[in-house]
Amino acid sequence: MIAFEDVAHDYGGGPLFREVSVRLEPGSFHFLTGPSGAGKSTFLKLCYGELLPSFGVVRLMDRDVRTLSRDALAETRERIGVVHQDCQFLDHLSVEQNVGLPLTATGRPLREADLSDLLGWVGLGEQAEALPPTLSGGERQRAALARAIIAAPNVLLADEPTGNLDWEMSQRLMMLMIELNRMGTAVLIATHDLQLIRFAKAQVNARVMRIAGRRLQIAGADL
Amino acid sequence: MSAREISRLVVPNRGQSVWLVLLSASAMAFLAVFALALSVTSAQLARNWSAALAQTATVRISAPPEEIEAQTAIVLEVLRTTPGIAEANVMVAAEQAALLEAWLGPDLPLDALPLPRLIELTETEEGPDRQGLRLRLAAEAPGAVFDDHTRWRRPLAEAAGRLRAFALVSLGLIGGVTAAIVVLASSAALASNGQVIRVLRLVGARDRFIALAFVRRISSRAFIGAAAGTALGMLALRALPEAGGNVHLLSGLGFSGAGWLLPLAIPPLAMVLAWAASMATAFKLLREVT
Image (cartoon, rainbow over all chains, first blue to last red; front, side, top):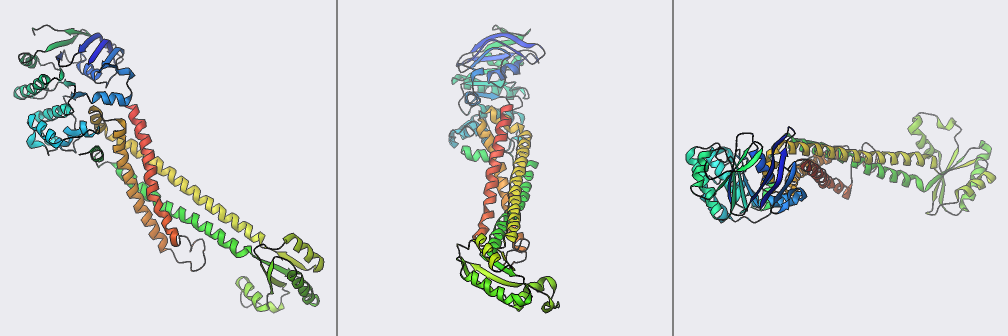
């Protein structure tokens, strides 16, 4: 689904990481951890084609990202849901319009009932008409999650999705992602919150990857 | 909500670029109405001047008083027998006085002046063989000079033609400036809506969708601005003094009859121009952004 083959990335000051080879299989659950600045966000950006690797091959849905046209890359992104820590929205549109964007902006039909169900599932049924700036941090993260999954993506990528949330809200958001994974979506979460990883590993069979010393290590069960 | 509906909403309705397009399209359309009117009027002037002078000519007879009547009779006979001459009338003294009054004033003693005799001709559609007529007159009435008004018509036609060219160049310049402003406004709109572009990219929107969202906003503002400018320009033309039956450059600037429909093409043309310019700009800038 997403495969890295001997990938290195360099912003110009030496490789952030190198010799990274890993595959994210359908239905898998991965955490990506490591110290700040290790390259977790860069790794995620490579996963949805926002960045191209400096070296090696990144395959998205079995296609080399370098060979994708701009439209083909956009089409590939339809199958990848992304949640950022800062979860940007179009602040002049309502929550439900923002959540529906992955479908409406790509010309796919949006059923009001599905949208309503999804907002209810993430606990935002009451805030459907609200504007994003009026939402709390937790509500914004859940809205971003709803937007990331409304198009039923094959993969969900989340970059520090609980970075601004309290523990209770973090658990709630994590349970939503675990539930999504149980429905078949592959999940990759970049986080440095080991407590959250332990919480998730108690619920789901998750693998932990760690970027350290400019290499990607697949961690064992113990953290 | 459909893709088309959401496309209208994704770009916030704010920013200086919106006003820039609105005001510049309005001003340019206002100027375009005048340039168009100048073009139409100069073409009309050229037609009017040509039509007024095209089928008329004059024979001027300058001769000593004792020979003037004889030469006049000879010229009239020559004209009567020349194919292509429909009518020939000797201008009486009062008619000549009326012609000169505009230049020399009413009090001038015209009777004391040695004025030439003038014969006004009306030509048929085919007209006479001018060179042949000149040679016959020179042979039979040496004091007679045939004047077909070419020396008047040519500079008038040239002046009208240059005015028209000037108006058309002005229209081209107005279009160019409008396109340049739209390019500037499109760049500004895209630059100031980085978050919109990032979010749309994130959700898988194609460049075409993103570009159209901006292009629709800009071209609709161009249409509204141009419509307002065109309406103002047309009102200003209507406010100019009426020319009566004659078309003069200043008092007759404007349109007549169905010609008033011409400026109505300016707003849609402005919209098409804005569409093309902003679409090209948007695609170019989006290609530069990962």
